[in-house]
Length: 249
Image 1 (cartoon, rainbow, N blue to C red):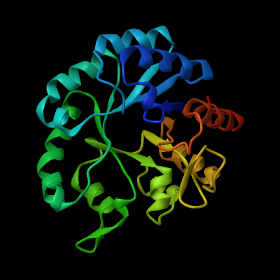
Image 2: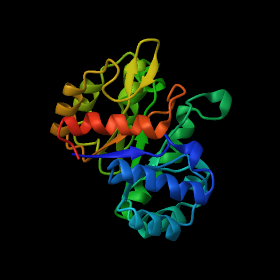
Image 3: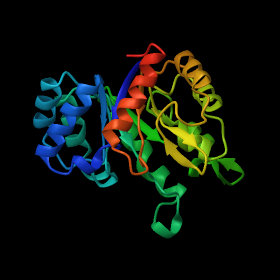
C-alpha cells in the first residue's frame, strides 16, 4: 500500500493557481508521492498534469462536485485521463429530502454515472461520513449503498474518522468492504470528537492497516479536514512520519 495526501486538508492555500502550485511543492517536499485533489480552486487538466509531473506527484483520486458529475461527465472523464487519474469520487451526499437529496434521488442519479465511468475504464468512488451509519427502512445506508451498485462500478473511500464517528469500527468495515476499497482516508479520532494527526488519536491503526491490506487497498490518503488551528502542512508532515515509521511509503 502507498501513502498520499488528501488536498482537502490544505484547501485554504489552494484557492488560486499560484498558491495551489506552491502547496503541491510543499506537500511533495514532505515526501508524499500520491495525492487526492479536492477542495481546491478550479484548474485546467493540463495545468494539473504539468504541476504534478514537476513535483513527482501522482493524482490517484478526486472528489468532483455533483453538478459536474451530472452535467459534464464526459469532460470529467476526459480530464482525468489527461492527468492520469483512475478514481473519480463523490465526496458528499446529504441523504436529506428537505435538501432535495433523498435516497431515491441518489439512486436515480449515481448508478448511471458509475456505469459510464466504469465503461471508460475508471471507477466511481463513494466517500462516507458518519451519516451512512444511520438506517433507512431498517438498513444502514452503507449496506444499501453496497447493494445498490455492483463492485465493478463503484468502490468506497472508507474514511476512518467518520466511520468511528458513526459509532462503527473502521477495521470491521474495511473487512466488510474487502475488494471494494482501493483508496482509504486516514484521519485519527481524539477525545472530544476532534480530528487528529494520524497516530495522535485513538483509532487502532494496526487493525486498519491489516484489514486494508487484506482487502486490496492501494492508496492510504491522509486527510485532516480540521487541523484545530495548527498548520495543515505540518499536520500532514507528522502523519507522514507516523506512516513511515510503519514502513509505508
